[in-house]
Image 1 (cartoon, helix red, strand yellow):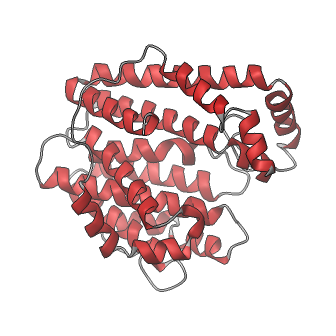
Image 2 (cartoon, helix red, strand yellow):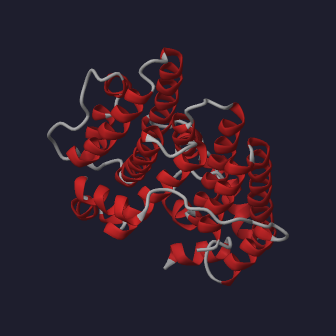
Length: 316
């Protein structure tokens, strides 16, 4: 009840939410039609292969099987924005993007309760040396234990990514750096959660771009920032209640060093809530504008796919 009231207060739910979205989309033409991401058949094959039903039962806070399929599609759609062509590379990029996005979402759900024993198991299973070993084909992440299914999802994604980039050591090193940044941001106590929020989308885009095009990387980086803001706006009520990091409050979880700053941010959000709703709308619109500009500069195909993705995200 309290979470819902807070969410309405900051425009994340109820009629105010529609007002924010109207402001964000005012004058924006998300044009063009194109197929994007894995099709329904491929998604259901993935759901069967990686036991989405069991994952949904083990981590019910993330949603049912249909929700996990949707999360996987989002990852494949980001990969599709960055990937070009319709060959084996492209197909593998979409599959790995789907699995990586799903894995990140599942980890986020487990870590919401940092006293959960599975959180400690995840921190060990997905440690940087383990991620690097999997990327290089030297170790496995899908061993026994309470998070075996999550490990299997990450193992398949990283093994596929490592195989596609095995001939380019410099790119593998950059991929490893991004993985470590995400791990440290998500797993380290009192760390900034900004990289954990923004980098997954950028990571999927970078590893999916066979041509390693800088303008494409800029597009998925901007898209990652916009998606992170949108997610944190939608989670704002929950995060205010639980003390979790939120880009509209503080990039770190509630703690002794962040309590005062978070309290000030929360007070501003809730006391001056109409002004806060306007500010949230402007931040979202600014992030959307730079994403659209980056996509335009990256070329027609990237622009059309980015528009299709944003339509799905904002106009379901």
